[in-house]
Length: 256
Ligand SMILES: Nc1ncnc2c1ncn2[C@@H]1O[C@H](COP(=O)(O)OP(=O)(O)OP(=O)(O)O)[C@@H](O)[C@H]1O
Ligand SMILES: [Mg+2]
Image (cartoon, rainbow, N blue to C red):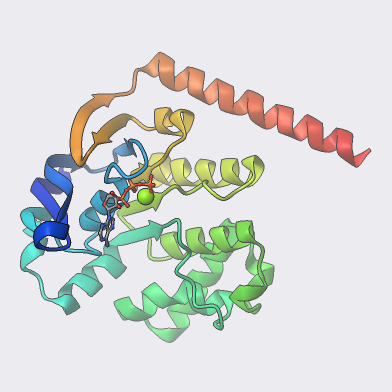
């Protein structure tokens, strides 16, 4: 398994002089192809900052990031855009949807930027919408969707370009448990079946344990980086299934 991301001495300082704040402090992190990695830590510890740097959405104050052995800190804006839109998928807390565009247009966007032909990108976008069960909403305006549906559009957009790496920041944060489970299953299916590398920021310990590896951050530093034991993974998975069954029963009861 090759390295897909190699971050060396990543440092991010927000603000200047007396207002300067060190959000990340000398992070070294390698991520291999096909891994699933959870990034966990308290609110304000630097998880989103790290995710934004790894996903090349922001630049570090110090340090370097290599993607497939290529130094990304040396690329031009245009090259960065192209790299991101052809190789990465994003599922973020803030939706980043263009409210006035249709669902289909939102999903097509990364393909447009990556230079995929008009005919092919429509086909690919409809396929992605089918996976998240939203084909019927393709022509709707994005503002007309529910929160969970918006999140699913974001998933469709994240997977539409067959990315090598998916970055997800609290992917299930705003969702009810059933929708959250669906999204989680989808992400791990992509990881297992298509070898997509998953990097997930989460507060949910059980979701973290579904990953093969957990990286813990505190005050901008990595405080632990370890493989999830198979039995812990199985237990987390079992707890998830039990909870899903409980919610299902409760819903059925309510419907009666
Ligand atoms: N643009 C910014 N300017 C100044 N400080 C910032 C900026 N963005 C983030 N910070 C600070 O950097 C620290 C890390 O922020 P970050 O968003 O990475 O935290 P987080 O671990 O993702 O937290 P949460 O779990 O609440 O999402 C915080 O103390 C935050 O206030
Ligand atoms: Mg965050």
